[in-house]
Length: 50
Image (cartoon, rainbow, N blue to C red; front, side, top):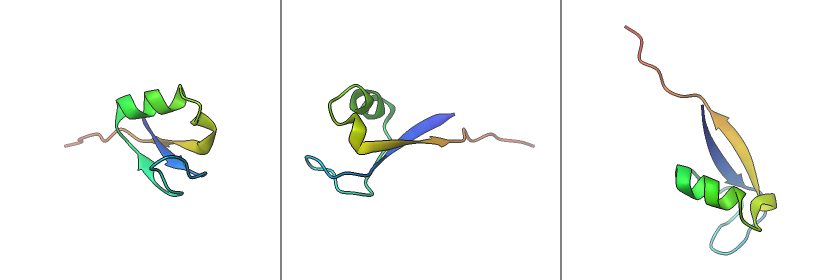
């Protein structure tokens, strides 16, 4: 399962509602001082069924 972040408090170049989706950006954001400005949303991993 992947995680995306949704901005709930504007900071820097990010506005409320922005989505942070790149895994490296998600990791960096959660380790930063702005971690309280975002909410993590789990995203199901796509599967291919035949």
